[in-house]
Amino acid sequence: MITHDSHPWVAKNGTQVTIRPICSDDFALAQEFVNGLSPSTGYQRLMSLRRPSLEELRRWTDIDPAREHALVATVLTDGHERQIGVARYVRGPKDRDAEFAIVIADEWQRQGLGHELLSCLIHAAQEVELERLVGTTLSDNHAMLKLAGRLGFKRTRVSGHATTTALTMELSPTVPGDSR
Image (cartoon, rainbow, N blue to C red; front, side, top):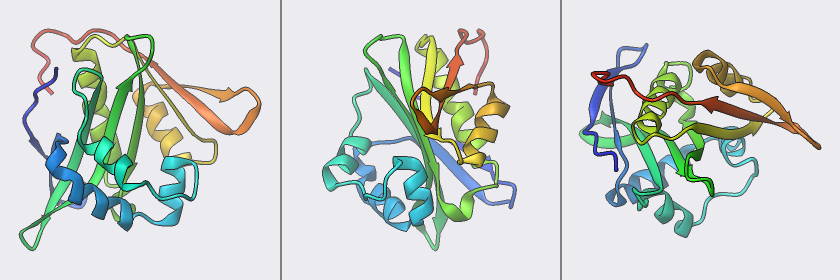
């Protein structure tokens, strides 16, 4: 189980952001976050126009640490904590692979947050000795494809699905003393 504490990070716009593991108390934060996503961003994350159900939101915040890990990015606005991004992985049937996902609030895109969150998630996956992270994105989600490429994910078209691209990263073990 990964038990990282929160850590500060500064966005390109100079705002102090906190990145920390998600917890079940984050349900209201997650609900507010999801409800604030534009239809386009929501569609890119879920590959559908639907909104997540309350049960899905509970599941996404009350995670099973033996199978999954999720990091949220938050900021303080007028003394109120606000979620601005989330990245997660869930182990697949082959215990050494995990599917990842990431979504950043519209107004926080292009601030370096996606890179920071996904880098932290990759490091967490390496710590628990996962061998591979996999994900799927829409083929026209250029921001995600660019981010994945910068971080070293390989892209392949999903056979029979011209609108989706598979992303795969082979992970190497963490280096002793590496402290992200």
